[in-house]
Length: 334
Image (cartoon, rainbow, N blue to C red; front, side, top):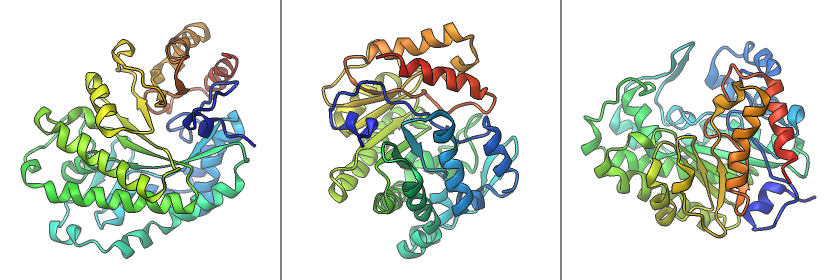
């Protein structure tokens, strides 16, 4: 059975636009909250084989989306390298300070062993997914993981860059760990890998090429050597007019765009898959304005290889009925 999303990466025209959503398994779904309430520790939840498999598939069962994305978290890499990670209600992730020497000597085998349940979840999900559905694995990009590693929390108010000039080895080692983790996800059955550089917009201008371009390019190159047929898609959130430069130099199989990206600034490339764009807040609008916003992206990318998605994750306050209505609209576009 044909997979719409993989067709898109293989430059095969679909009779309908593929659709899935970042953070599609989450707190806006009552069935998710029921399971989440039984798992008080979020890291343990991500490593719970049965429950993480179940919530990965929940949005597929409800909305018949074209892809599942494995229920996990980018900070599992920090956790597996020995940095304590806690998720505090209404505050988000809080990390402990790292021991640099210990971090840089993280044993690869022990690192992967701490994440072995993630790979089992991928295997389980792959078995349970219908044949026409695609499974995304993912990881955070080096910079984004580094921001948490050094800032010790979400940098929404203040970002500490004091360490950066001396932390090249840490960024390089994070890149190594990301590659290891992604390779294991591919071995377990992930059809596509997505790299989330959620804080790319905070990279200092003079460091952008080295930290955002070069490190992400290294990830892409190594993963394509390992599995040439596995698409690698990047989400460098917040880089705005640098997006064309990113595409040119990283040469990704796909690029996921955020809602602050000016569509008219995007240079379309033949063969490149575009994904996303729509502001998640549009799901709080009445149906017609919401559809009009979706149509803006559907029309703009109509002559491209395009996967409909949002420019960020679904808000926990979104009504499931709005997601259902949006999916129906996208399905009816062609």
